[in-house]
Image 1 (cartoon, one colour):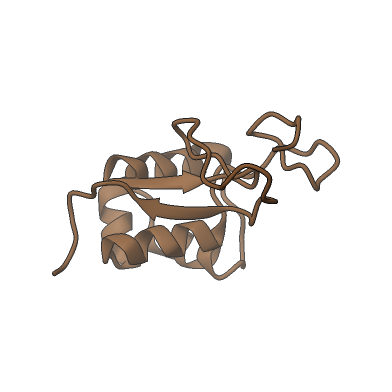
Image 2: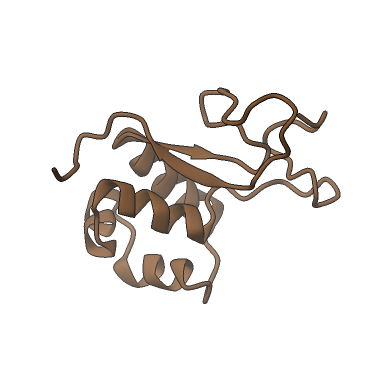
Length: 114
């Protein structure tokens, strides 16, 4: 693991890693089987904002990104940062492997389909 703190993207020259990436948002929703409308209803963020963010058409304000992230995490998704550590500080990759980038994993969601 690099010496950068988990909130700094090591390949960015010290730029803070995003709170939530569009790919993480899409992946987290898929893990939960949530539509954009469901995420909007649970987070009080508009469907249009979520759709534009996930398509890369707009970025989110920090407060909105934090709200979406918190909503997804409370539903049981662990969002993994670019360094390979989830929000609880748990390493998500074997020692010695390079980070693969931001991602999401299910930790025990309240909502899933069988």
